[in-house]
Length: 535
Figure 1 (cartoon, helix red, strand yellow):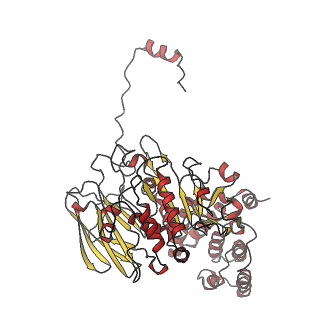
Figure 2 (cartoon, one colour):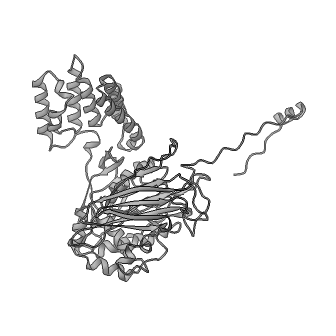
Figure 3 (cartoon, helix red, strand yellow):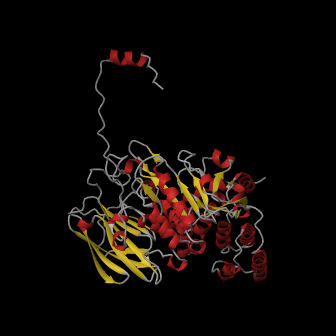
């Protein structure tokens, strides 16, 4: 058995998360080499990609493209055939690819194009593309294992193949529930007829899968929670703050989950009062999850409220939201409109409806049910996608860029100027109308309308205390304002004196010089037995 066959025998889809970062590095190298016309570098990157992920069809295709430049093109055709076998069956892309156009044996190429077209609708027989659906009836348990999973390299997440049969039991029929804190803050599903709990199988649990950050795309709406936090003495933080700081590479997946009907609830833990003593430690906010003020179990209140919205919506309204990938934004919208003290549109567009963290027991449940039950399908609001630009160059600091992240519905900046105004432009798309509102730090920012879909933002860093949040709303011609998208501006240190060590590590203490000791004392210390540390 050769080395390739050995890899095929042992590689599991559960291994893919650990290989995502190296895949991204090699993919960037391959793309750069392709643009430069450096065929040797293309081959080097694709060869390493195939060794890293021998069952990935795209790397086999990339290898075929690199090998097409060789005099002997036999290996190129072999790699292309393997790519097709693994699931790369886009015949039009094979035909139009510039690299593959160099293949001299046009008859063989035509045969492989036909092979790709003829097998396009057929199942993949091996590799992650060969996964089979996991099945159950709504209200039962849905078990997910390696055989039910593919891996999405674009978003760095699993793709679950599943078929859930309707039960007809209630409004949460075909809703999925997933707990990712090993049942620490577990929801009892019996009070939600039709709600299907997702459990990772034994192999996945042995590999510590299904814990902490969400990492699975499902073909059904998902309601999930995780009441965990990182407790390192220096790098402590909640899951949502981790997602916006040290683990922000996961934001692509979280945005995808948000726009694929997934609703996730996480406690703020020590990042926000009352559990935190350093004030508001968030340098940004995002709509991709719901953050609750509190620690363990504070998430359950808002998780239950989200499920209540789902089962109270008219069936056609829910179907419309799910089909457009807007159930999670709709839940965000209704939750915020149902906060105590939010009674009208003016309140909804203000700070009242958009706190950093949701307050304990903060909802008017009668209002929530009323809003959900009365919403018509055409009233499901759209989401605003926001692009940020600035006329001024950012201060030169290669260690910490000013733009921390920029996604469709959330962007974050750390402004390093100690004094002076900074200007940015926000432009929105995705709706028939837009609204820009300052919902945090209004004393330090002004908005000037440039056009109906754009504003100029002027931030005065001299008067900033901690953070500025600008919420951007979209609506259609038939809907009200939708869920907020956010653009956040922060300073390195908040008004409580906390500075995130992800961006500004604390200075290392000066190294102490060893004191000179008499030789006899040193010898005695060498032979002295140490007392074992207490357990």
